[in-house]
Length: 318
Image (cartoon, rainbow, N blue to C red; front, side, top):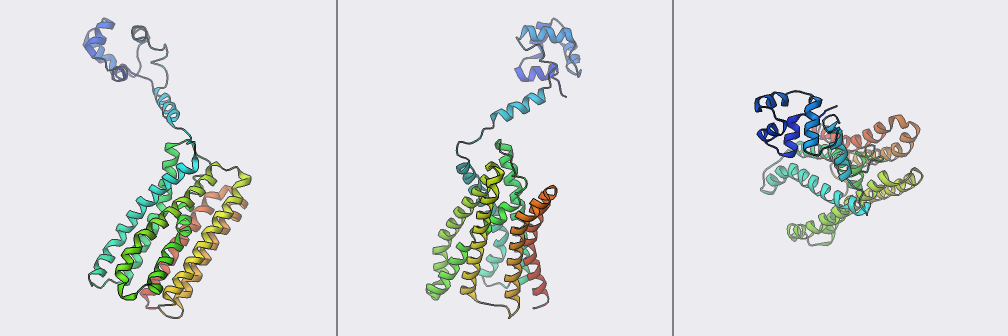
């Protein structure tokens, strides 16, 4: 419990020490000594509260608790939760997308100018962006809890937000790659890439933000009986998007890097995506006391394990 001191009172009301000393009819030196005391003497407190028309408990109430209540009172539930979540998710995806792009920039820069970049470096970059993606969910959850009165299951699902929203928009980039490589003129690949990259990125960003907004609204505002049904629809959309992305990638590039590695990669990623879906519905329900673990570990493994496998295979030349 933290009660106000005379120094705190003067700071809150912007009162000079000499003026307060005059009101209390004490020397400034004596008032300076009183300011260092943790508790205000009752007779001094009574004089101040009477002179400045303050509540009688002004020097005895826990002012920190009052400040917390005041901050909570400022928070308000948005009139349109989905619109609010969409705006927050859009900025969130944009900021962390730019951070991830900055991590990938060095290798792209050197490759563009004809310098040879070790394949291991590309995999390490991807691992870094996967970690950034996972951590971004914590920041999204923290921001919403600080700025609004929304709580619900936001903490439980914070690792699913970045993972599933990336899955939901995966088909956009894959479709773009397939269009560039299969439909447009190969000779103008660089120009066409620049021409279509921006629209593709904008569309992917909007879809990802829409999906995240729907996921946030479901986790935070929906009652328990409707939550499972909506989560099934959202997870189904994410899985469908990822399947579509895989099809477009396969059409664009085909199997590469040997006869075994691509299929191992596809199989591993689909297995991990399935693990996330199963753990979201079965594991979290059967062991609610371990809910956080069920919803945290699978996305982390799903994002990181394929990259670690790729690094291992590259290191052994497989």
